Image (cartoon, rainbow, N blue to C red; front, side, top):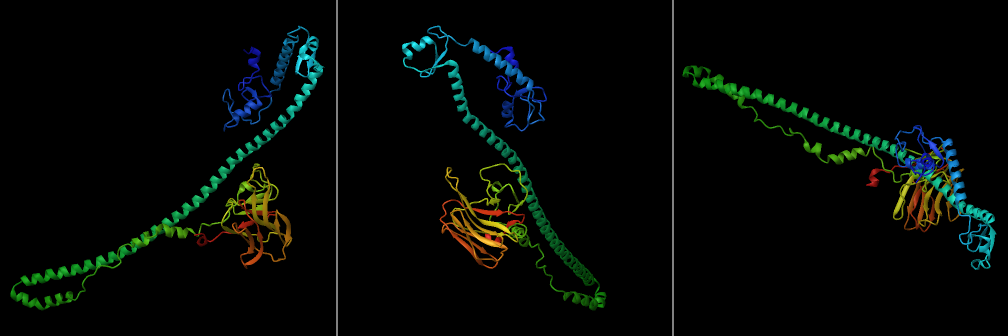
Length: 462
């Protein structure tokens, strides 16, 4: 059972005596490590006791409480030391010796007993000093491991924070893309409905004119018929007086054309609905693009900046990014997001006027114990092209022409990696290599000039 003093000096989280205590603004104190563990998976940093939100992620140390705890522990240790067994349980003599063979305290009588015949002894204080030093040495690897764990934890905390930032930025760009697509679809809908309404207006006007014309002719015919029928019902003398005029009126209307229905009067529904989604998609090709290689920001050197659509890279100021196993630190480089371990693949990189760049493929060993990386690359520096391989010395190429674009062609099965100028179909260099690992497109940019992956026409992709 703990004493009242222990209760006052105990952490509310671990219920043990405070170790490196810190104090929150609400006046509650905790072990620093206990508080950090309590906050680890919680989005809001609250006091574990009263749930008050802490405005400090790194609260100050409670030095007064720390001193009280140390004094209490020291007094406890002294009492325990005084109360510990100092007499031999067999001979009731003071334990002044330490048997090196049995690794236990002994008295002078124990030394001469049969149990300790030919054993080695050391004074109790010397043995304690020696064993304390040995135990301190044993603690060194643990302390190093503790330090390593704390470093990795710190990096994991940075990674967790970066995950949140990545999610927000990615969500923002996704929404922008869909806003753009929705606006395109809305414009397409408006244009097609407007075309439908225009056709309705034209054809409705045409039918209105046709109906009005037919109405006038119907009125003329009806009037003539009624007038003629009245003449027929008249007295003979009256009828004969008006006969010629009546015949003339009938003959004039008899030559009217036979009325016809209007051809093409209805809405051309097939024109508006036929292959509607395909036609919209065809128009959409003007606002969408396809890039055969997408850069992976999780592999980018901290000195590199990628474009929002992940198709361009340039060197700039150092970025604040977490340390992760996929990231490249040796060179200012970045990899493609998709690796290739079969088939044929190609992509064009726009190098422009960049004075220094490198392109190629990169692979890591699948063996977790083997940290070796393989890199095949074409390097341009100071007007000179060099073919570099991890397996051998660089080869200086005789080509001196400045190319604006470079095509990288990977035939994984045949073990060929070729570089050429797609604009002039000029071959630059071909590596021959037996590929066994997944190959990732590699881009190196050591200056502000961007390297950009060319978009591919959609008809080539289909």
